[in-house]
Length: 418
Image (cartoon, rainbow, N blue to C red; front, side, top):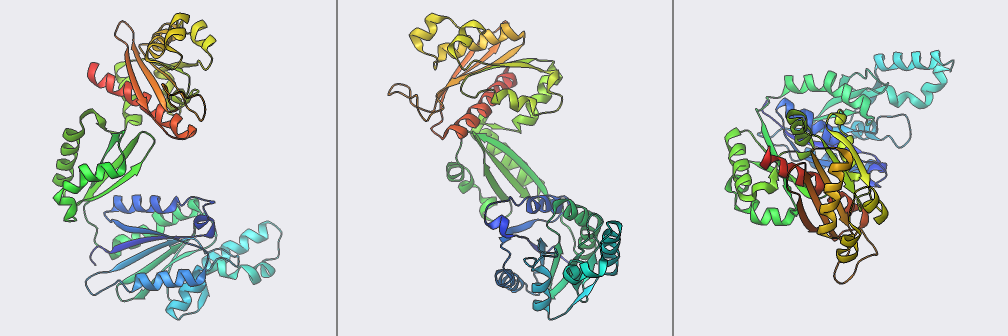
């Protein structure tokens, strides 16, 4: 059977209420892509049988003789009253639920090992070991509740799995994925991505995406995710040449603002070139140092950081001149420069990143508004670069923008000089 149109559905009122994040959908999409299948869209539904039923019926109606539909659904297979998946699917298909012998044995073992009455438990938990009559059972090797695959109509298959990530991932890889590969013909898919720094989604779409015919024609699928300080742009197609051409165009158009994953690439560069770094941070409060040390093995290149929030620390530890602070202020290019140079000496590193700015909400002036920030990129026996930026965002966002930008500026410096 040809490659289907795939929709991934996640159920749970905790998701639609914003109390939990849906991590299952992105994981499933990534696995499917690696198998040669592209997901058309994600759908998140509350624990409401009417809403779930309406959505499944709507998606089922999209199938034609030429277009098959695969619905991949997680959640709602537990023993509680708000677990509606089994009930809804049985009603749509017009079948009854039947017990899975394997799941029933697992539940019986579970209760007996804990000294509990299995027959009493089954009165309320029977739905947790049941599947629709005539379905293909997906055994649960981690938990109890089985998943299942059922044909809802001609050219429409629905696969349901538990919402618990640990159970779902194992079930998908061991049970569901083999069925998909036997049932459908995969395509060879290619992907590529770039970070574009200091760019909004709307601006990127206007000045780049809108001019690309291969995207308008649907030959390449694109996506963008806004991050603090950059956007992550991705392209997907069954034609590798189209992906490579787009990436080259993007690199040419944006120059140094277009990068690979800086947070993965920079540590590799530092290790390969045996370069050591340190930080001197004011407004970010150590967030740049944290970003470095979040990566395993950071001790090979990251020596340490100095959080110089107070001017006394700037002068006493980093050696910033009092005259500099009095004449130009703590938030200035001159102070950022001396902070970076002081960090080189204090930490004994090859390169340093310094940052000083006004995170807000208070502290701004007509001359220096909230959001103003200066960076210094210091190099042992080299010139110190100073950069000025303005990030007019809430305090937490400002700090992330500044931390990511500091790391990017070091990355850009190293790409030029090493």
